[in-house]
Image (cartoon, rainbow, N blue to C red; front, side):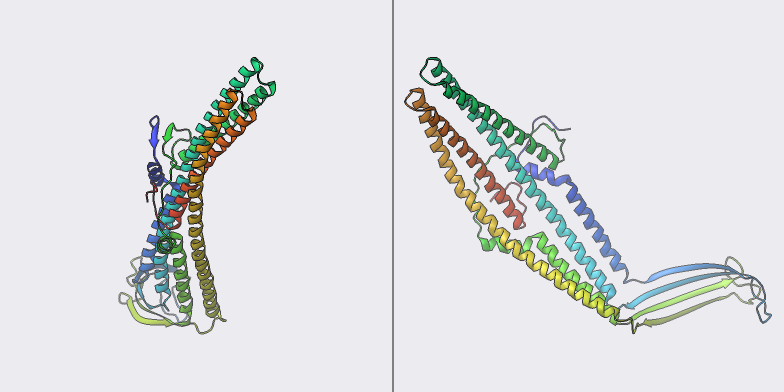
Length: 417
């Protein structure tokens, strides 16, 4: 049960989303499965124990030579088999299972990073929408005040009717913009509730500020960390290593297989398989030996499978190298985006100050009937544009900062430097 107006900061929102996210649970379940796969692949190095019970019935109790034989025959067999050499196939399967387990562990980290980026992006979009709502309300109030002034001047005959009509149109436009901004807030809040596994209409509050947080790491430092910690790069490298194990397994067909086996067998004319009237003593026997099998000719099957494995490794290696190149570009792009957004923030802050002053002066001149209505509307439009630009620049910077931390493989729930 969610308490009324439960407050979620950026850090708390991220941590809550990470607790029970279905994508992360799926990745964790997959990782547990690969851990069991490692155990299963290890089991082939041990001996295999087994048994077999048989029952058969003959048509006659005499053989072709006239000798007596059991009409019903029961047999029990027990065996133990130990692989000695399997052409490196078992070893390759075990090493491949270990690599798959390591890859799936990196998959969990990848899922966490993607979720953090998504939550932070929508959190800042929500804050931007909230700021736009405040700006739209302020804009609407200014326009309503301006309409009242225009109406008053018209009533006393010092301004034309067109000023009142224009003011009415601008008020209607501002009301529409406010509705759009409020709808965006509601949409982003619903999305955040979904990401946090809260009821879609949960009455919670997402609280934070759109502000500038400096990022001082150099490109070389970011690249070094990304190449070392990014989960998708780790997964790609594991894929190359897995492909190499596939080559080793394919080559195993060129070698013989060697195993040690031991059998014990007993049979008879009763369910206990302990001899019969036709046998003077209780029947049982055992055998033990070492066996080797080596297919000499299979129409090039092993050779073609080995070539296929080599080509697959080349493919996976090229994909890993391409991903590494893309990661380098992505980090450079994020740094450039942040730099651009930081510059736009400074410009927008100055523009807001200047637009406020320009609007104040235009409004004062119009009230004193020494300025035109068009000057007031133009100043108001520039002020609204400057406020929207500042909110957008701050949101773009923080979203780019969030994406950069994800790009270098670092979890940073509250985006602290």
